[in-house]
Length: 134
Image 1 (cartoon, rainbow, N blue to C red):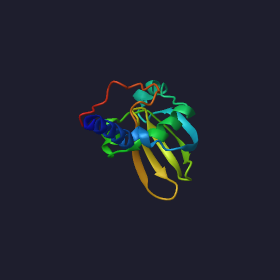
Image 2 (image 1 turned 180 degrees about the horizontal axis):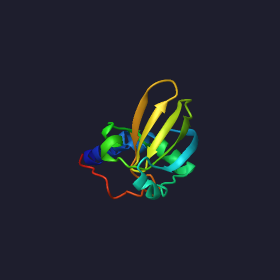
Image 3 (image 1 turned 90 degrees about the vertical axis):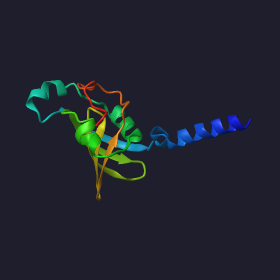
Image 4 (image 1 turned 120 degrees about the horizontal axis):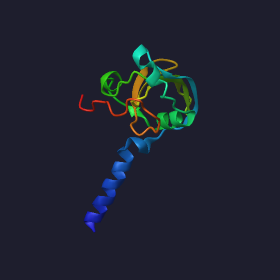
């Protein structure tokens, strides 16, 4: 009986602490550009990175804050998309989303945050090339 109660409590804690459990309502997303790259030799491959509004909304409702190394090294990709977001609570900003699942979000009033969500659903031209050990 006590064991079952502890297992149930652990399961509830896992759900509460899980990043997906804290999904944030996204009111609106605009996509200004997709398939971009600053590296000329990657430009053709990066054109395959074309996340839809639906996938970007899903991403920003589930992504969670991470250390900047996720954006600059760990899941860095030469491919990105950019646009704007407004959350249901009124917070809004400009985003730049890497095909690797890391995003830079600059809030409209002040501040920025690096976000990450792995299971994003879009085609990542470099999906198998990330160093998760960094």
